[in-house]
Image (cartoon, rainbow, N blue to C red; front, side, top):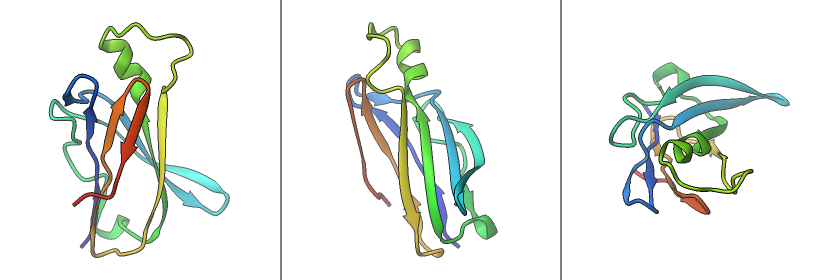
Length: 117
């Protein structure tokens, strides 16, 4: 069975993004339904897959990373409003037998992502 995982790396500090709230949404018609809320651990990863098994199905998903709160805890002097506060990644799952790993590489002024393994 397939699964969805994520992790966050703080590219400005060169460290894992610890304690970042991550929300997973699934598109349901014209709405987005919240499926799960979790936080990254000391390694910047979630302790368990975001979805797997019967919950892992084809569809459109969004990951919401609450990076602004993380940057506040890092004591970084940033203007208000922050350039990046909540990062939203929208992606599709087509293969229910595959492992979809969607990492976030973040700094206060930029981010990148990719489909990892």
